[in-house]
Image (cartoon, rainbow, N blue to C red):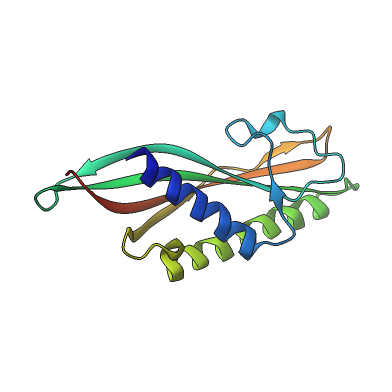
Length: 148
């Protein structure tokens, strides 16, 4: 099953790169606060999260696997929060674009990924020192794999 999860994770990374060509991979995506951005703030990462199986047909197992999609962006501090709010909205729009691409393409793995589940979002993490924002979307994908 590890190969299946890696295949899905790789396809999700490829989908994000194709959907958001201005974004570059994060060095640290399980702990995105460790990244140093230095003017290269539009970044992304995919972290495999929890998963569970549920009843299915004989000789196959169906897994609902959760993935965390991490996007980062910078902002320029002003006297008000307009730049911050704009950057957060841009990240949410980018997450929406990713979800639409995943939903419509099943990551190019339609015989493997058969359901795109509900989304969840964390509150944006704001690093005032680096003037950077981190937004994480939880994405649930269901796939079926053979037990034999």
